[in-house]
Image (cartoon, rainbow, N blue to C red; front, side, top):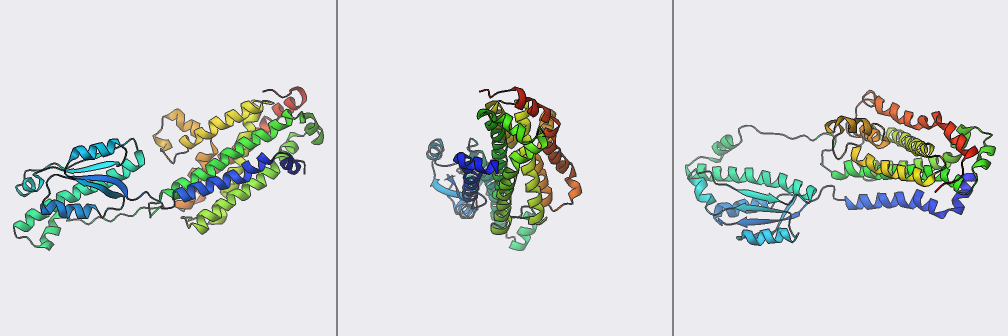
Length: 379
């Protein structure tokens, strides 16, 4: 009840614990509602302007990620549009392309992407590489038709082997399935770390640390449980709300079932509280230092979690560093359980580490006890 009453004295606490996580959820689910960016603006420079290139242009216009907002014969015009930030890519068909193809002189088709916008450029690069291959095939088909080949003979030559693609885990190639499912819980975990350090630091700031020591009769396990139990329930319910919205309402893939993801969410909440408490024990009585450490390391965990760059491809010291962050292990569990549906035996190591992070502050509780008895609040 002591912590519940504290909420009434600090309304900012309620905003951080309820409003901020729900704001994160709304922001990212609405931002990535389409799942994958589509119809990215690009320019088509057709300097050849023949019936073959015009037919190719119509095919290129059907690509999902590409939208030719500029069609011109002037490369300079397209380049200036890219410099103004109006387009992300240029696809160029030089003059004489059709003639060179029909006479088998290997014409060159080029494309340019603005990689300062990495995601847009990567998607357009994929489309334009496919366009270039299709352009080459279109030219070859035109040559073979001129030689009197039938369509069946042409397709047997152009595509002797039919390729089937089967994306596993995320068959719709939905960015939101990977990013929203990790960024939103990751931000909640960052909030948990900060509020854990703050709720203990506020005892020193208000000069109530000795009173807390008396209330728990010097038992640090009781003090920790009493301070964090309300937070644990609140943040666990918030994490479970995320699970229901992701897997029931938005129908993201969840091969292991929602109840099991709720279990992993609860474990992630506990590990985040353990991490935040560990930072406060590293700087006992210094709320600002503890919260600064949580902020620094909590933001760093997004880079080392593994969903933006594979951990196995990082330098070895960074691979070791990634293991101390709860978000990395939550990501490993999410990919193996929700997306791939593998057995728990594949993720038992991450489960053990999350439990260890939660229990680790108990081994340093003596620092908390010493601070209650001998240290006052320090800025």
